[in-house]
Amino acid sequence: MAKNTVYESFPKLGKLRDEVLFGDVWEQTDLSKRDRSLVTISVLTALYRTDELRGHLRRALDNGVTKEEIGGMITHLAFYAGWPTAVNAGRIAQEVFEADEKE
Image 1 (cartoon, rainbow, N blue to C red):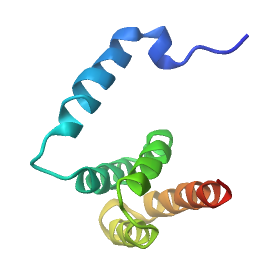
Image 2 (cartoon, helix red, strand yellow; image 1 turned 60 degrees about the vertical axis):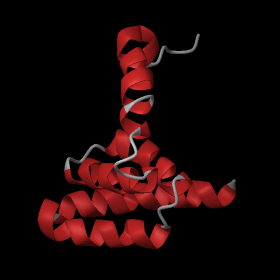
Image 3 (cartoon, rainbow, N blue to C red; image 1 turned 120 degrees about the vertical axis):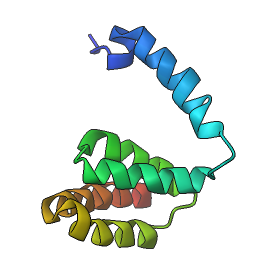
Image 4 (cartoon, rainbow, N blue to C red; image 1 turned 180 degrees about the vertical axis):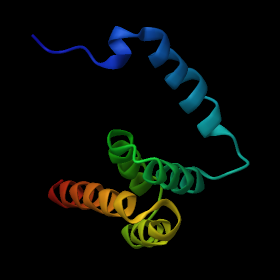
């Protein structure tokens, strides 16, 4: 039997994600989706949020952030958020990039 996702186990959390975060916040016009993605992956990198970073790196690529810009962000954050967080983000980015190349 397949394991439930967190959003299936806690449907209100999924509803807030879909309706408020992605349905409203991400649709605001004060920042482009590309810029929102760059900000989001920067924060997730700094906070060492590995699982969330993986998904948002994919979204960032879809929103027009380049692999070079992601690399630049990771390098820049090494000096502000710490070396381990940057190395972790680099590993996750490698995984995402390699998976992207296989598709």
